[in-house]
Amino acid sequence: MQHILEELNSASRSTKVALAAATATSAAYLAYNHFSPSSPPSSIPSLRGPPSTSLISGNLFLIFDPDIDQLEQWLKEYGNVFAMPALFGAKGVYLADPKAVAEVTNRVNAFPKPPALNAAITRLTGPGLSPVEGDVHKRQRRIIQPAFSPAQIKQMTPAFVAKTQELKSIWMSQCSGGPTTINVLQWLDNLTLDIIGETALGYSFDSLHGSANELNKAFDDLLGETALADPLRIIAGIFPSVAKLPLKSNQVTANARAVLQKVGQEIVDAKKKELENLPEGVADELLGKDLLSVMIQSNMKEAASQRMTNEEVVARMSPFLLGHMLFLDRMRTNVNVAAEIATFAIAGRDTTASSTSWTLYALAKNPEIQRKLQEELLAFPHDSPTLDDLNSMKYLEWVINESLRRHPAAHAMQRTPVKDEVIPLSEPIVDRSGKEINEIILKAGESIFISMAAFNWSTKYWGPDAHEFKPERWANPPEESSVIPHVYANLISFLAGPRACIGWKFALAELKAILFVLLRAFDFEIDPQMNVKTKSVIATRPMVVGQETLGTRLPLIVKAKGLRVE
Image 1: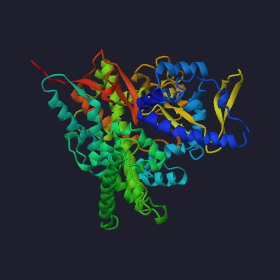
Image 2: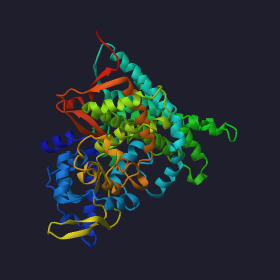
Image 3: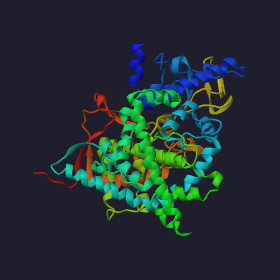
Image 4: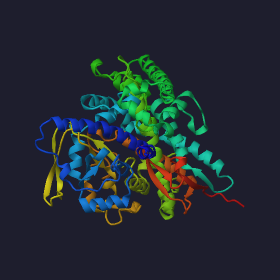
């Protein structure tokens, strides 16, 4: 028992979510297959695959925090589809076959997230875009889409640049005495939270300057790294009665959610009142202010029966603040607008901060690439580029593409079939008996693990140097990579199909603006003795090997360009 507790306590937050979801999914699956006719049988028992590393968690830790060399070995030995040990001896299927993944990602109603995972997300964010399925998801996405139009993102780009200039000033002060070691991940967390507050909510978090307003503190209490590691949060998402127990953790969560609900609702109410009081036709003038204004106006144009409630909107905004999980219990009327605030918050803060950190890490490890990129950025004549200017910088685009390939924001996604399914494969695999098969049969409730890491790192798609950081490959991407399901640049980093990341264009623009400002001002180096690994905490974040107790962080040596120290 002690071994089990130690193993669970050492797991990352994303793995704990997967463990909880897989527990409930496995129970449902076993019940279904025990009491239902088994015709035809699942293919999973006949598939080859790696041995389990744990009687409790199987290989779930390796799915969400994989080792690049080990993953490549699995693909060579077992093919692009294989059985993967999960909880308590159960097995799921690991998918890295493009045809099979396209089938799953395109048929979103047939292959939703596991119900237990959706329940855990809903408990934190409310019924926002991430946890909902089917027609509800389609309706919400249609209403939200105008907030991510190219014109809207162009109008927000100056805010991306201006906020990053604030961070530049802070780092310049810290580096005034010479090269300084800075935890860039922490500062980028603050920067992206401030950017999302301004561009998505019209709200000032002022995280760069250490402001401790009540909403900022609520986010820390609810979504800080210590809070996210609390297994009670995951269990309570599946079994709501656990949240009613008189425990300190539950009280902290309840207090934080109350603040988030109050402030989130105040923001929504103020925006709605502002729009409603404007003369007809004048509301369009607000489109350049923030995403929430755009989304509320789009929602108000819908028929009454199709509008999102306040809770949906508030929950949708919060993954942009933090990456994937926030707040709000369902209120029965007019509350869904709130859920969308939670969704925006999560996705925008955590994933962009992590992606930017990994890009700076790659550049620090490859100084020649860093210098080449800086030459392109410094050739621009001033400090205030438009989105069109940023998009014209080809080497910047190549560096970002390569960073998204080598360091995707998530290594894997979990899905489950709602009924028995036959999934076609792009090429045959060999099962345990030596037989070639061109399709696999899955039973309702079985676990599917879609591997973004396998697609992004595979030498099959990216050539023998796939494990290297090489932006030049994007001058002429390998033709083999075109079969990878994607919405951008032959990369599955933003997933694919109708449920691909709705904010991917926003994320790219933000990344370009941040890197433009920072790399024109600073050189980044890394301690050659320091080793960095990935840790899945909402997004895949950097962690220093041997300093795990300090949490996810990325200390880099930062030097102001052109600064001479006597």
